[in-house]
Image 1 (cartoon, helix red, strand yellow):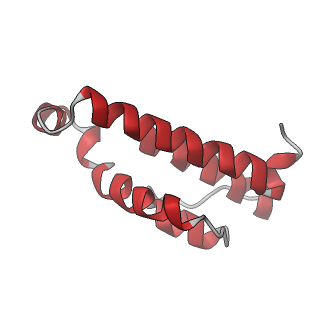
Image 2 (tube, helix red, strand yellow):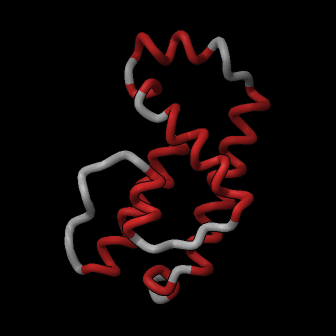
Length: 100
């Protein structure tokens, strides 16, 4: 769900910025590029990581496999980093500042 929450806020930015529906993509890097968002370096590696894991976690058979690779500590770290990115976007992106 971390990927999905970041995806949705990026799509909200694009919708506000361009006054149009966002593109049909789950690629966070593409959404960041389209929004011309200069994300801090410390978030870029995490975006790359969750971008690769998003599709496999949408299907039950893959979730069972991945649940063996992800422990509570990793899940908490992903949640913390996702919240950090969302907070940064809300603070630094003009399209979201007026909506808070």
